[in-house]
Image (cartoon, rainbow, N blue to C red; front, side, top):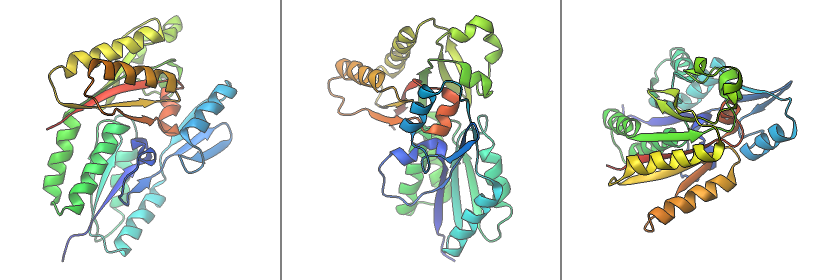
Length: 284
């Protein structure tokens, strides 16, 4: 029997904000704002979400991943469409239960081979893995070759980000070394990174402007002499995005474009408004 491979992502990859030609099913998370619930991107866009946080400081957002029953429905639908194999690329399992839920749901569906891949990251690097998997499926590569490529991307990307407030990360339990931030320390504007799937503190900085410049310094230091694809992700922070792009292009006049994308609402619920990340993927 001929293999027919489908690719699934979760909404944390922010794929909704990227133009692409592929039919990618999404395990879409829900966003909770007070008593209201929204399906990420479908019911609320990134910009609308951040505007609501700005307008009403009393709202504290949280998120929840797609219920198992709905994941099973998606698997069953793919099976009815003739798919024999599914690749699911999820947000880091250190940040969310989606990885384990995707596996548990797959055990309820017979005659469909599901492979769940832990991206160990979120946003653009995760999206890059999903799009690479789709491209390779279209070109007829087998599963082993696809997973080798995904591992390469996973091992060859880095992101640093500056957060305007630590409140969201600490309250939602997403900062793995949060015990170092007590009382007034929450007023710090640290530089964070993702290390082995966890959000870690790189540098404790007192002002947001200095944190942004530190992110740029790290980027230039680590990419010197390397062929990289730069990317920026941000939580409704267009001003800083434009500043970063201008600095990148000033430093490298041959740079044609810098990929930039909004931080989708269910990720922004943990990172908080004005968060901005600068990262790179090292080309083969």
